[in-house]
Amino acid sequence: MQALLGIFFKIKAPALAEDLPIDNDEWARQNYTYDYIRQLYDQNAINCWIATVFYCITFVVSVVLFKINQRSNYVQS
Image 1 (cartoon, one colour):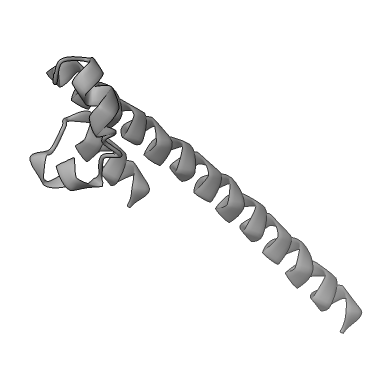
Image 2 (cartoon, one colour):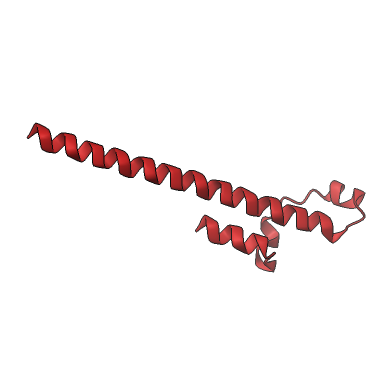
């Protein structure tokens, strides 16, 4: 799900505009350019993909530990 969210941020979906951490003062310093908004979309996309990687790592570690635990329970019984 996070990966899809990252893709939607990357294609700059208008529905996600409310989720951008817009700093109005910074945006005003940049003369309200769309480049600032693009940077925020791209940063949110990267953050979503980083979260996806961590979720996948956690899932793989959980599966490995589950398999190890199953084997140890089988040997003990």
